Each structure stands twice: as C-alpha cells, then as structure tokens.
Length: 416
Ligand code: LLP
Image 1: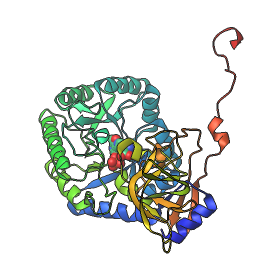
Image 2 (image 1 turned 90 degrees about the vertical axis):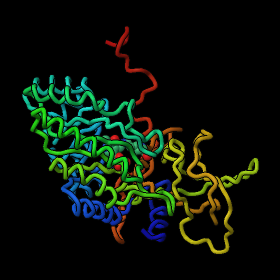
Image 3 (image 1 turned 45 degrees about the vertical axis):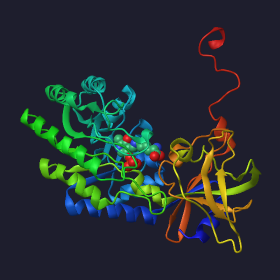
Image 4 (image 1 turned 180 degrees about the vertical axis):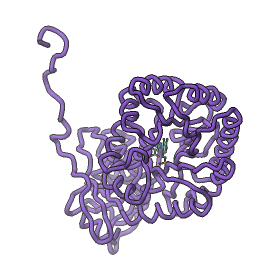
C-alpha cells in the first residue's frame, strides 16, 4: 500500500478507516504454508476472530484455508463466504446449546470441546438430532508462554481447555457414546508467541497423549491441532515467530503420530496487513506533555489501552521541514486510558495530518465498539492498484437500531 493510496482512501472514505492489503495477506499465507509443507502435513484454519470482515474471509477461502470459529456469528460469516462445513472447526469455552445445535446441524469438521460439561451437552444434542458429532478435545497442556497475561491460555488453572489428567476419561466417555466420534486432540497455548519452545513443549505433551489414547484402544483420531498464536513484530526489530521455527517446533507431533496437524493462525496472517488511518484533530500542550488528539480512539483500536500494545504510528506523506517531536497520540474518548501510542517521535503531526497506525489488521476492527456512541469505522481492501470499500462506515442510525425510549412491555399490565 503506497502513501498516495492511503491518502486517497482517507480523502474519499473519511477517517477513521481500516485498510487491508490483500497482497500482503496472500504473501503471508504462502510463507506460512510453504514453511509448514517443507516439514509436515498441516492444514491452516484461519482464526476468524482476528479479522472477520467478509472480504478477508473470502480471500482466506480462496487461498485454501479452513476457518476456526468461536460463535454462531462467526459461523454465519464463514457460511456467507462459502466455507464448506467440513473446513470449519468450532472452538470456544462457552458454546451455548443453540450454537452447538447449529454447529451439529451444519456438519462442521469438528467441535473442539473445552469441558466435560460441554461434552455432555454435545452428546445430548447429537442424540436429539440423530447425528454423530465429530469432536475434538482442547487440552490444557500446562505450558507457559511469555506473552501479555491476557493472551496466555495454556497454563495450569486457566479457563481454557480440559486439564491434561482428565483427558483420558473424557476420551473414553466420548468413545463409548454412539453419538460422538473423537477425531482430534489439540491445544491453543496463547497469542503473540514469538518463540518456538512453548509450541515444542505443548506438541510433546500432545504426542504423549495421542500415544496414551491409542494404547487405550482409541483409534479414531484423524488430526491434531496446535492452535494459533504465532507472534508478529509490532515494532521494527522486535521478535516475531519465524514460520520455519514454528514448523520445526510442531513437526515432531506429526512425526510421532503420523497425523496431519491443524494450525489456527489469526494475527500472523492479517496483523501486519492492516493499518488504521486517523486524522489529527487538535494539538494540546499540558502538564509538560504534548498531545496529538486523533479522530480514532480506544473504541476503534482497543489493543494499546487493553494490552499496552505498541503499534507503530507514522505520519502519511512526507512533511518537508517538520521537526520531530515527542508526543502522546490519544483519541477523543472520555477515558484517560484512551491512547493509540505514548511517547512517540513524530514530525508533522499537525491538525489535519493523516496518521497510519500500523500492524492493526488483527484484533483491530474485530474488537472495536461504539463506546461514546461513535459509529464504527469503514473498512477498505487494497489489491494492487485497486481499492474498494468492504464495510461501510456505520451511521448514527446504526447506533440506535433496536432501541426504543419507551419499553416494549413484555411483563406487566401493558404487555397485552
Ligand atoms: N485458536 C484459538 C482457539 C484462539 O482462541 C485464538 C485466539 C486463535 C486460534 C488465534 O490466535 P492468533 O493466531 O491470532 O494469536 N485480542 C488479543 C488476542 C486474543 C487471541 C484470542 N484467541 C490481541 O489483540 O492481542
């Protein structure tokens, strides 16, 4: 994406706007699948939550990815772009009866069970529908990762996955019931992981588990799942997970089991391929700090506020003669924690200047909200020298859709 393109998009569509680079998504998908295929048999299931725009999903499907979903809403999105049901895996710690029923009726590749309670619900619902549920068990492999505490998932005592020592009994229960087939065991150990070691540790645990299950006579496994979590470099020179290192770390699982390995990356594929464009509204100097007040805030991009994530920020287009200054780039939201980047060195960030908040393609729009009654931004896809809108900017009418000043009485005198 060139600066001229970004400037043209901001001028035509307004700001804030998310812009995604289709070419870069293709390149990253190829880099990952090439690295994997050099070392093992693997299938990529794109984690829809990272960026669930239909145009991004359509691109993933075209590239040959499957989808990893965590809600009925994501299932609807996957279906809307034509992912075949057998290319969709359903993860998530709190799937409801209606979501499970929908997944069973759709005939997904598998439902990844995260608890014994969920297994019982799936058995009951599959019996009701008269189908055999294809299920996986998401195991908590008790592996710690060096990432933000909010994006760690694979350590002991976290809400995710079935505790390792409970898996054999659960597997037995599933094998004994005629309404389920256990087709996979898997893990997802966290997000923004930049080293191979935790994957290797988790892969070893899964390999031992597969061996134990087989020794107990359980022969229905068709694949193993190592989850997503591949980290990217947010700042120049920062650590990132090299796809070859990742492939090397998980390959022993394939070698040991002979099973294809499912991989569920989100951020790796789309993170670096997106920017959030925002315009400077004001400058303010107060208490020794120099603020750049932008028209995008934590409702548009939550990651800096929630995870202290440091997305690179730059001024789009050169500003001749501008002197670099140390500034805090903040949004318009009524929260002190509303910032896009603190202590940044920018030149030319005057009111009206266009800023690009980079590496915002993953967990940017998908985590956005309407807080402070701000319509969510537009989304644009760039493909070579073409670009087009893939989500219209929300309007004020969208903010109040479904609301009414007087209750539609459901209970009480006026309900009739
Ligand atoms: N598979 C499962 C079961 C997951 O829960 C996730 C992400 C993924 C795959 C994809 O992980 P990825 O490859 O994108 O790291 N909002 C946070 C990240 C939360 C990740 C949640 N689960 C952030 O902005 O950093």
